[in-house]
Length: 65
Length: 126
Image 1 (cartoon, helix red, strand yellow):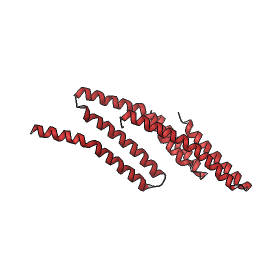
Image 2 (image 1 turned 45 degrees about the horizontal axis):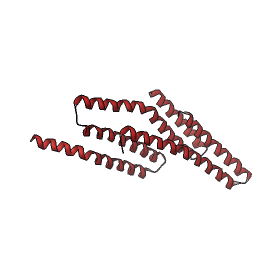
Image 3 (image 1 turned 180 degrees about the vertical axis):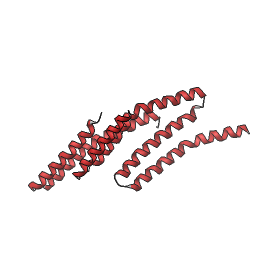
Image 4 (image 1 turned 120 degrees about the horizontal axis):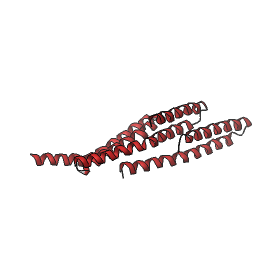
């Protein structure tokens, strides 16, 4: 739970961008959109877990129920 | 602790610029995660502040139902500010103002019992 998560998301982002570029040049643009979508979903799930963890800690810390 | 926050923030900004060059929408996620990490680093500081609040309350003997709303208002303030800045970063300002308005209403709801107890004490003085 440190700075490495930022780099992980950056890596996924750059990877999906490169993959979609390559696929588009090969002429398979619909697979490119699917690849970008898959990367987006992975990152979305990761970020949602972190956001829910933050809100749980906030709720327990400040006693907001 | 402060330097850790500054370090994380700078990393987030740099990664954000790199990702924006690829025109991928992960830049927004990097913003969200940097904000989260900065708060997680600050967590133990906030915990000490809240313990001090408890200590002050025991020291001055204030009634419990006066101090806990203060802490809750701080929490609400922080959550609304965190999410409204995220909304503003991603471009929709109107959503950010709505979130801030919702936070204000939540704070008003919390403040009503404190005001009521204040008025009761004043009336009992007269």
